[in-house]
Image 1 (cartoon, rainbow, N blue to C red):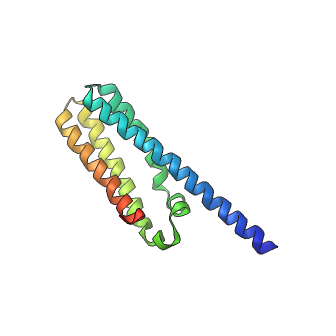
Image 2: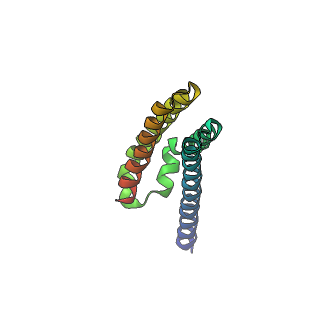
Image 3: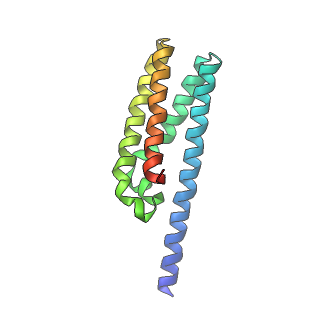
Length: 129
């Protein structure tokens, strides 16, 4: 009986981690869409708001325990790659914010491309693309 309860507890915790990461990825996607819309419609405020949304969500991915909670067992060895990608993403978001604040939108769009590459790198490793 204890083993069954322990198994159910572990499954519930892992399910919560998967649900939370899904919500986080949705929030990051929404922020990236807001950034893209800002570039497409010349709305600096949307770019900055999108950066903030991605930054806030990405902070959760600086926690190894949080990352480990949703990685499949076969992918646990990639924990550091996900952590490095998250920290790199933070740096690139700060860079893009600086460019936008100085109205250097060409450079900001280049930083945006690097941000998308960071996301893709992590997804390629974690999801096995």
